[in-house]
Image (cartoon, rainbow, N blue to C red; front, side, top):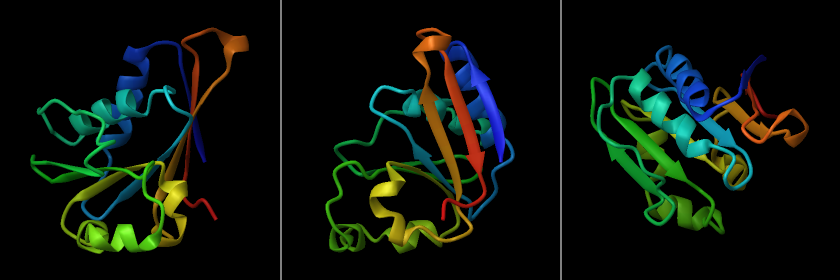
Length: 143
């Protein structure tokens, strides 16, 4: 387990960049955190870390956004997924076991589909530390 602390959006971007720069083909990173905690900011830094220059947006209404770079990035938002059948309809296995890197927001909603070797990134606010404070914890396994 690795813990980071962020006091600004820029620091959250930088942490995402640092983590993304060590990602490799086949990796799955699962992002967990409340609405507005900074998952998309982290994702922007992560994407830059793997060499994606394209603007990163939240895939809330499309479920998955695909970005091309040296390695493809598949950015999921599972917030609205209600059951496993929906996940199968989008062909999640092609992404999870393909030749890219997956970044999965709200992965806890589809935990049964997440491979055991996925990395879990928890982003938490702590208002006692200040409005912009974030604790970012990376774990090798959620279960």
